[in-house]
Image (cartoon, rainbow, N blue to C red):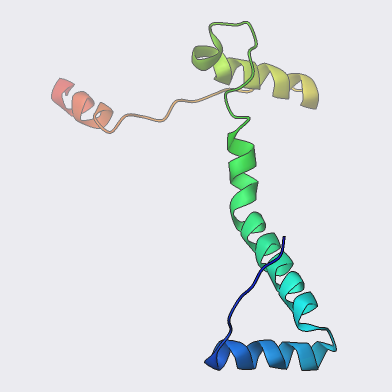
Length: 104
């Protein structure tokens, strides 16, 4: 791709400085700058964007995964660590304490 760009003022000074400081030609400084900017942007956006494309994409064939994931994790961890199935505790709901007060 051929690009024709106009640099004036501070941008021109910065480009001239980069070319002199690196010993590269203006075209090479621009190519390197675009590559650096591209790499930086991909690092910021790419990680989660690429990961998000895979979340929920698999099909296990099971219809109970959402409702039984804690039991499945406990089974897997228990087998991996040779301990019995780990106890999985549900957090108390904020209203549980209030419901208990009413019974007292």
